[in-house]
Image (tube, rainbow, N blue to C red; front, side, top):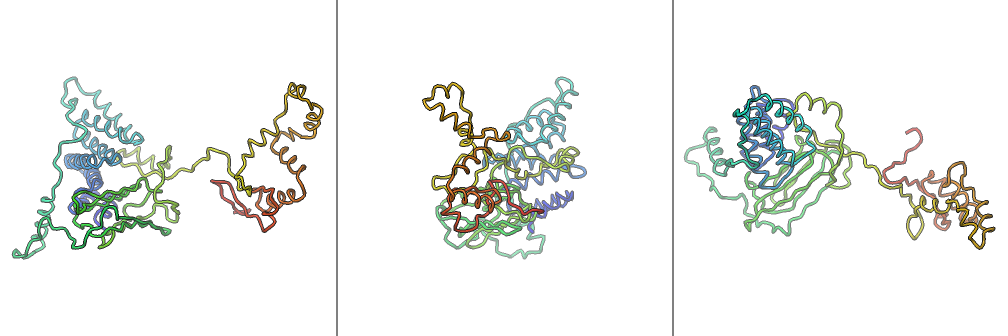
Amino acid sequence: MDQAARGAAALKEGKYTEAVTQYSAAISRSPGAVDYYVKRSTAYQRSSPPDYNAALLDAEIAVKLATQRAKRELIGQAQLRRGIALFGLGRYADAGLCFTFAKKMNEKESSLLIWEKKVEGKLKELEEGAKELEVTVTDVPDVELPSQGDKLREKKNDSKAEGTPSNAVPEPKEKLVTDIVQTPANKIRHEWFQTADHVTIELFAKGVPKNGDKQIVEIEHRTVSISFPLATGSEYNLTFYPLFAPIDIAQSSHDVKASKIEIKLRKQTPGQKWPSLEGTVVVGEEKDAKSLQTETTDPSLRREPIVHATKSLGHAPAYPTSSKTGPKNWDKLADDLTKKPKKDEKKESGAAGAAEGEADDFDYDDEGDPVNGFFKKLYKDADPDTRRAMMKSYSESCGTTLSTNWAEVGKGRVETSPPEGMEAKKWGE
């Protein structure tokens, strides 16, 4: 488990000092990882006593980094942490503006409403002209980002602390850890596969620098981002969002190898089969009572990732068919055939008597079910082979298939084929 994973575990367990230590180590290796600053800011805010100045600095660095990468989700998270830190410092007007910035990035962040109410209450208590009413922040803070030099100095200090000989030959500052010819951007490809518990993404690219600030793999609950410099001087970026389902960040990891980057994601729901790597953003997700209670008592907690909601079909179930012309819209066909003719239409028809006779033969109402009446007429007027096909297909498929093609149905047993979104089960299961 790397430092970021240990930091996430410590943050989840409420060990905030440990979380700060682990995320600091992770940042020293990857100073461009936005999520590490957001998480360390959270740990600073929740420490006892809280360090709001340090939390604010981390949040502002995260905002600037996320803005450079145009990542709306990360910008929203960073602005939220920034606003909470400003609130803790008593800068209520600045905090309110930051919450507004966060809301523009993610209107569904439920904790924003609570913080906005808190800011509103504090501002009402202040007298006109109070310092706390002044707005001094901008959407992108003017903060200095950590540099490669800072990282090298940290490594040098660490080496001295560990007793590295003073005559040791230092590594060149700009040296990249690679003697392999780098794969061109248009030749880089990726694949993915899964087990019951994990999803693995492999990005096949040779010569990827292993330096912390030169290669970044960011793993979120629903996002995986890969970024590293190319030999041409440009940067390679690849983002998978949203993932088909949430993942467990603490149990996920990545490894940069000579010929590929391997990312191993732990499924938050073990045993769940992913039909695809990426899914869709679910609107109107629901939270369980436990998460709602936690969010109410501690509104600074990040909202847990959403789980895919069950999709409701916007159309009638499509049953399998043996027709070469494709599936029929049985509902429309039944409505057309079971529609009662108007009296005026009967009188104007040249074959009024025949029409009335046919109408009398057709039991339109059939105990209030016109569709059932239609199928009765369809069966009544069918030839023997068609009747056999209808009976065999309907009974063997447990009522999920109705075929009129005996040539196909007579070949073997008709399997149960439930409509889309439904599952066939045996009685008692």
